[in-house]
Length: 253
Image (tube, rainbow, N blue to C red; front, side):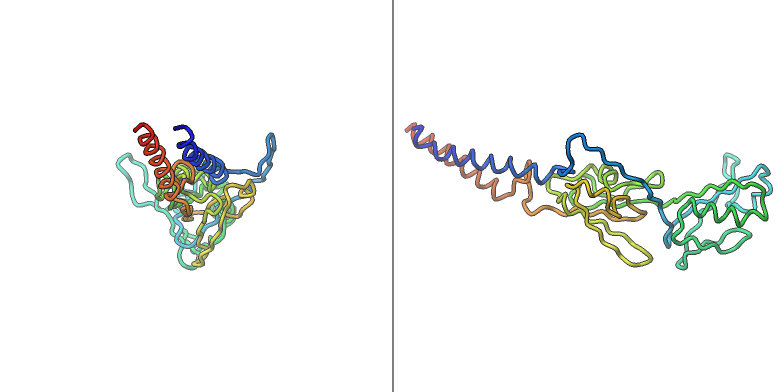
């Protein structure tokens, strides 16, 4: 009996071995990093304002009455505080700022806009404190992730790894070596592809995401089950299991 079922068992073992060998190569991140290796990267990322961005700007001084004309409000809320209005960047990259008029913000970072406004307001206010925030920083993650969707970002920066973390990470079916980031620059779509299996992904211009970026994770070709086990392999294993079961049944009779 053992001699009759031995070939089937061997084939089953080979199939399992192939699956276990290939799966880790397709799902492990940063495969080219070495043990105890230290990677030092200088973070120079700053978000830049684009057309249709929503910006919150608040100007404060020691004299609230002096700075009041430079803050857009829509009246007084129930708590007695004034509700501020946000600025929307128009198609020319401008915002309409109280008193001083149009200010072009296209391509500026929040810090650069602070400096620009402080210089413009220096003839009106003494030592103004200016707070600038990007209000519409969201990223959309689609494809082979556990929770696709659009996610608001708190703060001024987010990496692609953090965005994927918000979406629950890639499923086993996601292509880790070919993740696409779709970015809009002044109406022009820019496509970047990142290889998450390499540590060099951290040097990519798309490693830090910008507002309204879309991250798309393509499905792999093998529609994996457990670790890149495709449907044909599943069928093959089922057939082998049936052969073993049938062989055992026949040999007992």
